Length: 199
Image 1 (tube, rainbow, N blue to C red):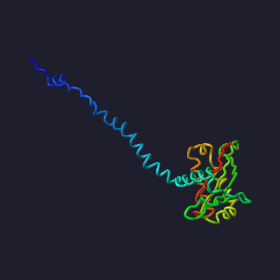
Image 2 (image 1 turned 90 degrees about the vertical axis):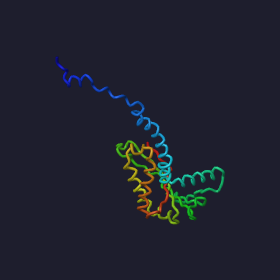
Image 3 (image 1 turned 135 degrees about the horizontal axis):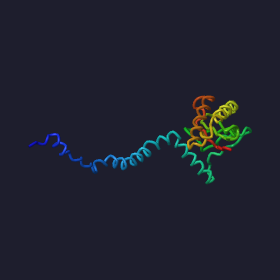
Image 4 (image 1 turned 180 degrees about the vertical axis):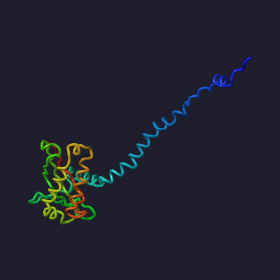
């Protein structure tokens, strides 16, 4: 009589397949699905939005809204008075730090959009603002150089650059930086894009 070999006995009694993990296997997926929206909301509300408001100057938005409200109700908001060169200064209401805010327009900058082979044009008008009392005269003295700097920056932008949602904010920051390089650091404190058209 022959005894069955130990190898055959082992192969016949193979280990049963492991039981499925059930809820334990799905736990990482469930946590991800539940926690990610909450984490995204928290990051947006408490980190991203405050940083965005700070970088865009949230205070200036409220100041402009109150000025618009004064004008709509016939109040004494900041009304500009143009001079012979088309520059205007505010006569009140636009005070910041105890000084009157001076606003000077830089109008009708027309450039070819980069990469369009001259078939697309960009029209931009700007208003430069600051608390420096001689801002108007400094801008008039450097008008040609400021227009050249602005035209160079605008002409370097492609149609794809100009169609991005943040294009105006990026242009505003770049122009403000370059204008302050020409006029002196901190001279122009705010820059408003009053016209922006691509044709």
